Image (cartoon, rainbow, N blue to C red):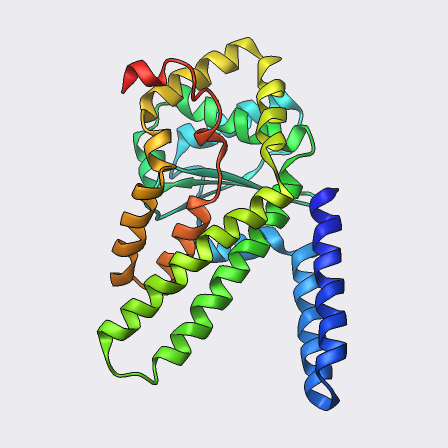
Length: 274
């Protein structure tokens, strides 16, 4: 509810600002664009997030263990069977997108290839639990807004930098944009979602002791949530992304947003595993 309210307030503030500062046909054009963006945010946020991640849908014949795990956990939690996707990213991440009756689970390709059936069960359970408790739709809208801001910023800067023939200048501009953009996106995410989201999810997981144990074993395998969430680690990847295209930079932005795997069980046996 808070995410929808903040999105509505944000669009209302944008409309008021445009009405005061613009006029004529340009004002009408921008208003129409804002209205279309609002409709997409409310109705198609999940599909557009899949597009931003470059996700590809899986068939049951491709990943039988993944489909088996998703089907089993969906039946256990009494939620509809989700559509399954994978994407090529850098961090071991998994997401669930929920919009109306559509549910999508998206896994990093490397994570999908290395996870056992028990680990896939734990991942699908944790993601579908957010759907069961009515939490996933809020996260989907929030991630889409931030993903769209990242895509729009990189696209506009990229078009402007094409006018400059010096490659080093373009790379410097990309790094500078990322350096300024990522903290702002994380701030917006924290305002919309807050740490209470992950605490609430942790309390829900406590109600399922067996699945919680599977999750703890899975997190022990990752062994590096604190490192992935450190400022130095992020800056290294920001520098690395300069040699990549803007789609990779957008994927990296979504991966670096606060994730439950950086928050849940971080005080458990993970320290000793490292």
